[in-house]
Length: 307
Ligand SMILES: NC(=O)c1ccc[n+]([C@@H]2O[C@H](COP(=O)([O-])OP(=O)(O)OC[C@H]3O[C@@H](n4cnc5c(N)ncnc54)[C@H](OP(=O)(O)O)[C@@H]3O)[C@@H](O)[C@H]2O)c1
Image 1: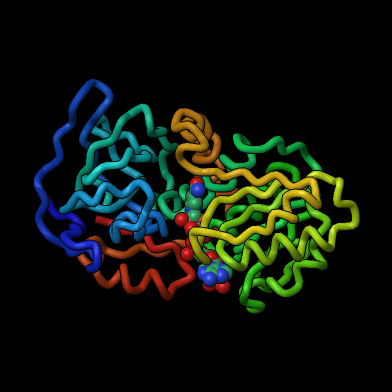
Image 2 (image 1 turned 180 degrees about the vertical axis):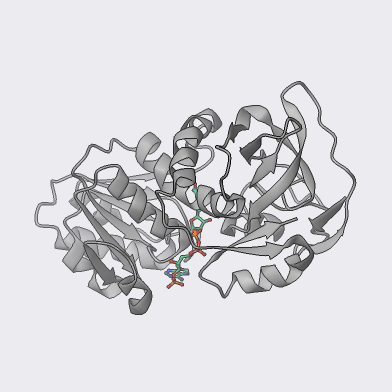
């Protein structure tokens, strides 16, 4: 079959031949791939930098997809760590890690939205207590996951959603109560939850700015670490943890068990399929995967590879 194939971690995948997939065990099945999102996690899988990387090559990248199963049903599926990902004509899925989608859905839209939307959906459902009427700050709000986090927080009843980012023009596009740059965070200090896609130095600075500007340092602040676009480590001063009622938690595979992710899939998939989320998606042909890798760094749309 044809697939996007990574043969070296310092080069993008190439469109080439790859052995046909074979299913093992009762829960596995070979499916036809309809659309697979080119998420940041897929880029880090393909360049070997993700924390789950096993250094095994060659590999077909792709961590999730909208697929057609042998009975003709359309499913959204999430893959385990594997060298046969979803950027191929066919792949193998574990039926238990998939959800049947309603008929008539747009595979590209679903493939673009599920991974970024799932990040905040699972974080707010499974990693923190998130009653209604909370005030939420999204750090890194202009990316795909940040834009989804704004919508997810509102859907879950947030009283106020504040977006923080580095680009004023992009921030101005967002439908939020307030938008601030990283330098203006002191004015957005009185929130209950921070959804952080940034980490690194900017998040550490943001944390200090926020904590020192809070009206009531005894009021709980939960910082949910989800992405690390600005760096894998953040130099957090010890005083930050002592001087305010701050809790830091992470949300991702591992801190949220796989079964909990799967349990959230049907409701999120139904909401995305229904059109409840504003999704910026663009299809690219599997044959053009090499160019798509370069394009993904520049575009604001989530690229979706279509075999
Ligand atoms: N844990 C999970 O479950 C989970 C799930 C999905 C995604 N993620 C992670 O979440 C992160 C964001 O994903 P995404 O899909 O939103 O990616 P994306 O669409 O590529 O967006 C990246 C965002 O990061 C910002 N950014 C990049 N470099 C920055 C820097 N040096 N300082 C400050 N901001 C910076 C960008 O700001 P500009 O708009 O100004 O460029 C943009 O808002 C990634 O690390 C991804 O792996 C985690």
